[in-house]
Length: 340
Image (cartoon, rainbow, N blue to C red; front, side, top):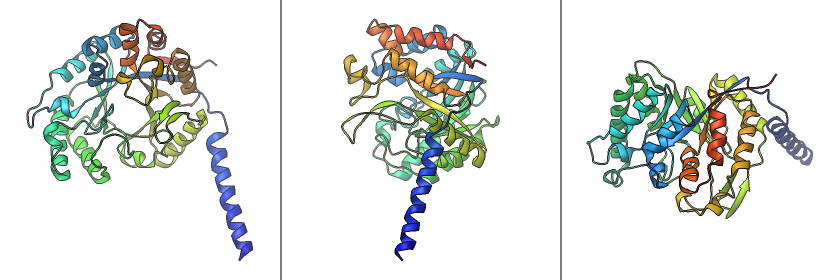
């Protein structure tokens, strides 16, 4: 019996060692072409004290960004029950079209930026079934309004719907399937649907089962609330490459980094944190390092998380360095071609 147990434990250790070697050892082949984009949230720009139209325009006009993950917020679209307000979103989409930019439009209840789930006040006290009914109605309105817009290249339904982060009332895989089915039934152009999951805390299997494209995140230095301290994720570039290869081989799905850390992640919300604290997790040197790290993952599509913050640094703090560095990246026609 002891011998059997010994072999069993040895087998487990050998298996774990094999997984470790697979995920942590090796050098991915560098992508020949990399597409760079940014995330944009009207609400986040406003929370930073910025003119959101000016910020969005600067991303398109000055940085010349051609790929934008555009975050919609339910509480901005439907502030009052049944009364939809699309003027701001219309403006953002029209502006993107004027600049020949491609949009990944994020829709649903949980779409990104704190508190993650952007539920209107009138819907917060509804029960789960009532909330889900209202969400589906809102999604239908959005898709019907923008399904014929050439700038919308793909839909992202919810943001990290399987990852327990943010002030959200529930997680429901069955409902996510209903949302996806609804979008597919309404979109005559059959655009791909992105489903995202944590880059560091997930194997992306659920996202691959539900989505046409797997979206993931890539963060390097963050505040870890459970430890009450900053941590630096130890994962090497091959960690992301190997997982992406598994997803491609098993599910035949592409992996896209829909959030590449390019802004701080501290113990407080960004707009409540002093600059000195912000710079513990993001500054010019770390920005450059994260870009170089991304290039080494072998992946070929990234949306940087932090464009609003770069503009805030430039306009409100007289610190344009990261903005200027980003301009170098995007002014290469959004494509990085590897040497050799």
